[in-house]
Image (cartoon, rainbow over all chains, first blue to last red; front, side, top):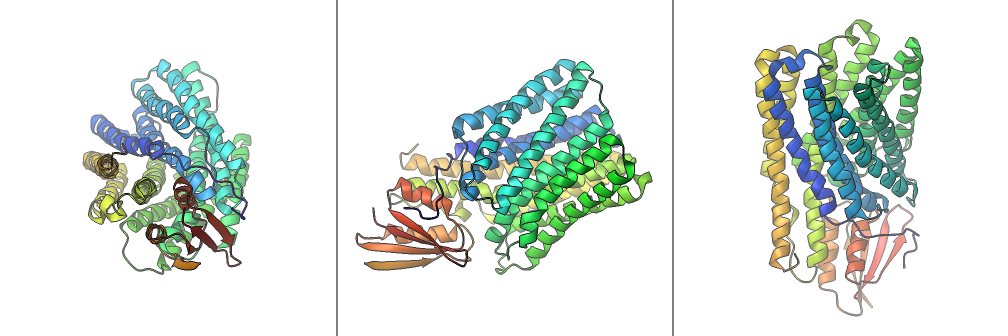
Length: 429
Length: 72
């Protein structure tokens, strides 16, 4: 009997999110290899083909990979709905996303026109399946909580990001005429301030108080942040496309302020932790939220002082702070909560009454998590320095990025290995 | 009916679930577990269904939940 009226379905098998989580660190390593291969010239401008290839290895290969995989898992746990046919859906998202990322990066890197067409097909398929599956699940959600509202806005922003991305790829492949600079900026801002930030916000409302034992986010933020940001993004986009400069500047400042509120609010919650036991993943959250705050402040400053807007260094810093510091940082930290928890949960579910499942700290001890955090922080600082002194810092930044990817991959792989060994020992696999 | 009360409120995951599963491990027929928790424990329901534990969820006025679980 279940008087709360919620309908429950099976959580997806561990393999569903795990395939995304294990593939993601490989793309950090690929990004590092690309940096070593291309060298300091990468930092001349965000518009260079190799820089665009590097950016998409990070945003598609790492970020989208984990975000889509985690959503397949988060929806049943946090919202109480699951996507239909989880294994098949996961494969139909994961395989085209992985191949599409490689196709797009190669197309940029080697100026392959046909590569853009392949990337469009593959990424269109992967994201198309994801968007349909998530929309079905989210509109079936039994309760329209703050998290559900934020996830709906995030998935809506993903739709805009993907549509703009496909449009840009089409213009590179078939020469469609587009205001490329404006559309690229819209694509990037919808991806980072929309899809990424709103997904993070929706998940943070649940996981920050839950895992870090903080007070909840204020109700006005939980209810209002995502709809206001989504509305602000829509208004800002219209102003940009209509070339209403003053209105676009004001809307841009409002969006930057919104990002600062989320970052500062989250950092404040961490000062209110009721349990003062040190938690290695807290460091990742702090790096991420400080990067978001700094990125948003930099964006605010560039909108207020227009001469800065066109500086290639400022644009690169914005990208590094928001993509690597904010997004990669928090995703990396959350993976260390999600992956061992899921392994533990699935082991509990299968071993209950038959054997004792290894506990979370046995699945993933603190020491390697702390070590990898230093690699992540070093990468962030070296990347920022490389924008100013590419000749000195590009190679150290690339090596640090490679170490970050290898560290994360080894840690996640060891969780998966302990999980499968525990099952094999009981003859369950 | 004897009742084992497990209070998982305000604990860091997965401690609440660890405690309730430990209590279920020792549950005898005629006993039930009353699990107090500050949020909907969706993953727990999954395990309960898989192992055929009958359960009932009662939403409290304070936003918390009580889950009454009996032996299968």
